[in-house]
Length: 377
Image (cartoon, rainbow, N blue to C red):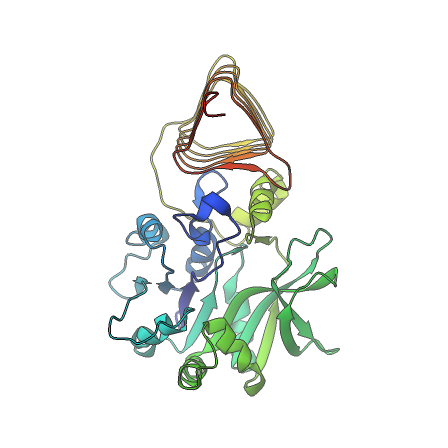
């Protein structure tokens, strides 16, 4: 896939995550003990042979730059191609400010224009999957289509995909249209918001939208012009986790406790890479008891943990009980605290004897560096 340039668009809605996304975008949400959401699409691209990747960030830039750095964790610190970050700019001479991400793509169109690759792979980050993009790319090239959209047939009994894009095919399996899932259909074709597109078609769509003022977002401009071009589709049949609200985020984390899901998501078409942090093995003390949980390295466990995801460097003291919870990096849970259906952000501290209980569909959340003790409660 050396003839394909990767483009990751971080303009995703992050107001469904409460305190977890106050200072970070959806793409930077911690996941599965040691990863970030963005790690999956970056690893998919790298494992498939894409060596040039542009990240078009939103306004919450600091955590993106801190995690990605030079791109070395994904072998993207290269002299030729590699990782490029494009942050929003503010024009003080402009009489108005356009909403959406379209201006950011237009302002940086030279990056794509002068790239040697003839095709683009556009993607968001919130659809987590381990996918072999080579097969999809080969079908796209062989079809001669202008655009290829990747989808997965799903059965949405619990309405986990409300608001996501759905792809409609005709009786022959050819692309017909794309719309929004309102929950009426239990079975439908879920768009993974991953698209292959010819570079010249991309520029036609971008410039047309800017000149006519017909769209604020790149996806909106793309959808407005689908009728003008030849569109093919590629069906993906592996595991997909949709991270578009707090319940889906929690469910996606707990899903990795199933070994089949974990193997599919992390290893099926190549390893998922992330920023490396060197820490010692987790220390299980004399009173530690762990059942059906994922425990990252660097932790100190002396309490009871069940059906939970525990990130790096977490401390759980004697007598503490943690069930059905997600505890992020460096959190400190002191003696005899009781947590059930709780999500703690990084470096949160729960005092001795504190009880926090949420609900499966509405977990209790505490933000970064939150400190909760009996006096506060």
